[in-house]
Length: 366
Ligand SMILES: [Zn+2]
Image (cartoon, rainbow, N blue to C red; front, side):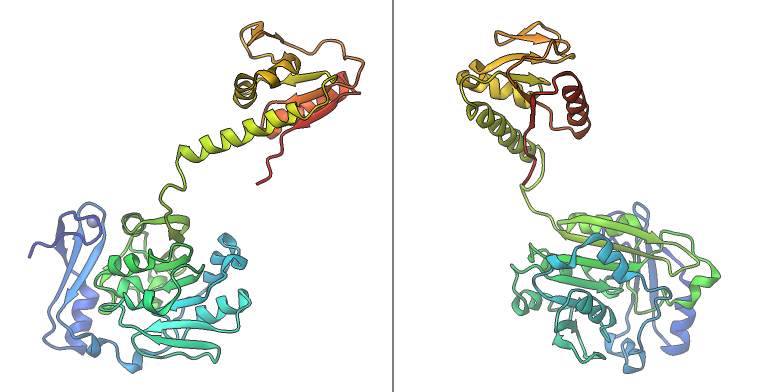
């Protein structure tokens, strides 16, 4: 049976999955299994005809062994939990141990576990019933889509027939963050890793780093942090991501900052008393633009010092390679650069050569 890769659309081929085939024969005689692997991205897909209610029995409701549980450490290393003004929401959370860890770390009284059946084992967690395979749309009905929530999807996506459908719903929470962890089939496994059940009938998707990133990319998420955890630890991939904001990035944001800095230089020049001698050190693009835009600002400049400008004048102003003798009326030096190293070097030079001058750099405060 030809099956397209659910992640990249590439061609897949059927491969044996020996453990699952034998396990299936032992527990569910007659079950038919097919394991497919994508020839392009390596993503795996395990298909069988078992009804989910036969797979997910109450007997499986035991807390998962993560070995060294560093999930919260990873989250807090990459996200200031003070930014989570909304709720902590674990999806497919089972007992909800990660939800409770994150709830305490974020200083919340309550947190939520969303799952198809309640197995919640912590008193401060509220349960929200959602079948993630068929009614993920209920997430946007249950939680404020504008709030900054922290969604936790720990060992969930590998269970879903259509993980992209869930991400489509999560993407609508445009101010939220999502932590995702799945087993990693893109790195080397060893006997030690068999203590964690990463290969089993309840797993449909077999991710690797490429297929998880592809899923996130197509789902409209920005990857904020990503790591793989290798054997002999549990072989997993984890990521912190957020819905990508259209138009928030790209060179346009730099163009806006350019105008902002130009304006700060221009207003500083124009705010100086008329008799003051003002010198430019460093003819950066910002400074050049400020002097180009405003005849009045340009008229206030006594001279420019810049050892990389190829000419001897700029818009009629003299450009000197190096500063000359210090003026004796406490001049103002405007450092045209926004680079910290250049600013420090110019300040050191100004302190030495023109010790009475006021040295000014534009504020880079937000
Ligand atoms: Zn693929």
